Image: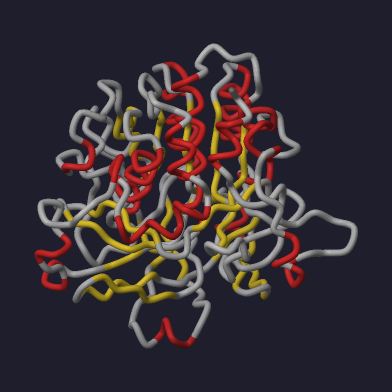
Length: 402
């Protein structure tokens, strides 16, 4: 077990409304590289009687905190380290859940897609895409580098790889840590289930590298990437952000060299640029097999919280996604963390049908995205593509592979 992390600096808050929540988590540091959580715009969603609050927070870039475009120098402690962060989080106490949210009573549609998600799946052509992929991701392993997952959740029955790892406890049981109220509790569980909603027969390789508060260490993220490659993952989903880190970049390049697709969330700053490592997806050593993913609504309008810029490649509708939550519950989440696994799931559908293809599926997926410039004029910068190729279109992507 790693030594206890020590509190160091206080968070910067994105809005006064978060202050009212009474939440000011500590930034913490390990013996190596320091890490903190990265949060998106504050939101409140509800299903049934549950009120789920996503927390806003601070962003880090190479030694400075970024909050809504303002920079605060953080001193030698921060500049000496790289930071790994998870996306938007939801907290809920057990008493807030009611029976209608339990997996035993929550109605779902075909292929494990929840009725509440019908509008967003319609917007990306999931049903048509699944019809063109009858294997539904069979035989495809997707590594999820995150906070672990609820290994006992019914959503994952029969869908977990025998190869998994907890890089915090250094064992093979990457169980989601913490409890309701911890800001990252359920993050990895939610991300993994979205992949299975898109590709229901895929296999999840859970790799725990983030604490219950969303913090992590770039060394552990890099180690998780290498583990995924060595143990046969064809896709890696990493809904994280950090300052540039040579070891992590080398690990991502190694994944690309092995032909492993890496899907990265763009970040939740609401501004340009896309956060690292997603911003390397178009120009770094891993570019050929990496994808940077931002969030949109079901009409293709960029989400107000989503990072964007020249390094963004594709959008997916992640403003209100129902997905698994620890304890055989389900919750609504939002953030680019939950857009990325939609793209990972789409790649899994394609690999389930065309595992031996010589086609670069990352390029094919972006080439068949739906152009959404017309509904995003406020997010466009003259002479620069800031929204990538458009919104994910699973139907067009799969049809292009026939």
